[in-house]
Length: 198
Ligand code: GTP
Ligand code: MG
Image (cartoon, rainbow, N blue to C red; front, side, top):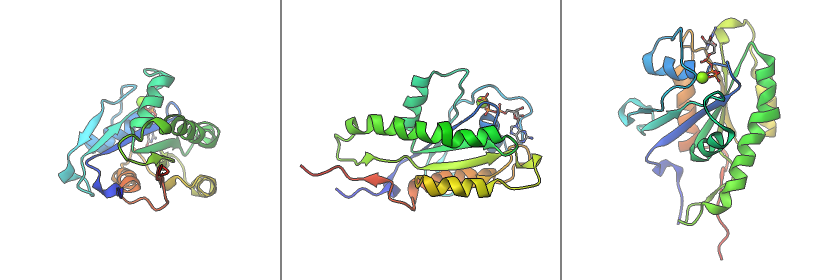
C-alpha cells in the first residue's frame, strides 16, 4: 500500500564522522543543555519523548565510536537508522574531505547491500538513507564551510540539509536534531523507491 514517512512511530538518528569531530559532545550538549568538558568515547543511546520534540515523535539518538565499535556494528547501526548525521569539524579540513571520500560512500554501499532482503512486509526498499551534514565547532572559526558543503550536496541528493553548529556554545544544537527529524518525516527528495510489483 501507500507508504508515508509521517506515519513513523519513532525516528532513529545515527551520528557518524571521524574521531574527535564532536559526535558525543553534540549528543550530551543536547541532552544536558550545557557543554560537557569531559565525554566518554560513546554516549548511551537516548530516547527523547515525543512531547519535547518539535515533530511530536519519540526520537532515538545513537552515537558511534570507532574505538568501541566494529565495522560490522557500524553497518548494523546504519541500517537501523532512519537518518544519518555525518559530522565533521569545521576547523579540520580532513574531516570535511572524509565526508565524500569515506562516509557518504560507506552509507550508500551499506544500504544498497542490504536493501533487497528487507522488503517482505510491503515496505519499500530504502534506496537512499537521508543524510544531514553537520559542521561542528563553529565557535573555533570566523568563516563558513557551507560553500564546500553545498558543492557536496549537488552530487549526493540524499543529503537533505546541512547545518553548522557548536556543542560548546550550543549554537544550532536543537536545530541540528530538528533537521534530522525533518529529513525522515518530511523528506524533500524521493528517498524511497517502491519495490517492483510482481
Ligand atoms: P570519537 O568518540 O573519538 O569518535 O570523537 P567524537 O566525535 O565523539 O568527539 P568528542 O565529542 O569526544 O569531542 C572531541 C573533542 O572536541 C573534545 O575535546 C571536545 O571537548 C571537543 N569539542 C567537541 N565539540 C566541540 C565544539 O563545539 N567546540 C569546540 N571548541 N570543541 C569541541
Ligand atoms: Mg565519541
